[in-house]
Image: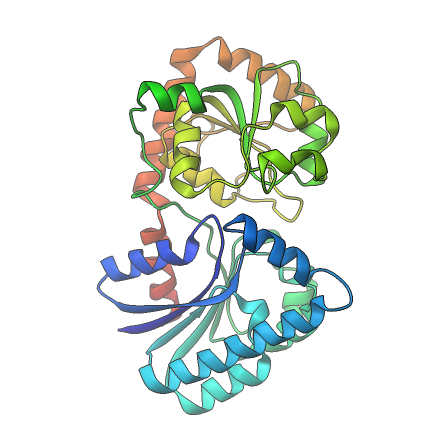
Length: 344
């Protein structure tokens, strides 16, 4: 079938991965960018400008108007059977109404962030009732805001991994020297992450992708104590895979909006790497206790780091089981198959 897939452009490359997965499933897919995320230093500063006053809101609105017009034109010319919105906060309710009137397409939203946290949550939530199916990436997001929105059908659809990008690899001597780490963390340093990482400086810690540019790190919001541990600025997906492959332990500290598995969970596992994650429970049985190691507080985390750094075979066996489970159940092709099955 013909599919329009609207996505954010950001480091995780979710849009590209989902297009590839849908194409493998036999569909004709066109990718439309909902907004440009922090995929380079230039776009990082552009997004900073969008958050600034007094012009930020005008830039955002201008960008959203362009997207909505592009989407309407694409839908009119392509006549898709399915429209997947992975950037729901940028689609106006009026656009959804017009799409329902002018096409025969099923329209679904796959929320990659908690909808109640959007700066423009009011009109985003006003559009939820116009989707034929609403998918959420975390079960905790199904709260009062969504329940009161008039949502028709709401289903959990977690993140996934692209196994063409995230996979076990053998690093050459140069890459091993560049990316080798006992304990690594990849990603922006939100408050929860800063709090934990500040208490792990006794370990051989490496921070990747924590700042826009390593050379400008001192001007960032990273605590001064953590600056010596920064190994890079923004990293692309292929580099992320090298970091995971070269790390004995990958830290996966969830964003405050998350209570369930994030994209890194599946990317680290697909890389064949070992991770420690602060998820409290797995009511959906994605991973068993011998496939993924969870921690609940800093004392437990410190103990687990010390233990698994000194138990190589046990650490590698756990990573191997997580890899096998991810390749079997948690790739983007599995997520897109679920979405298609439930959308119709």
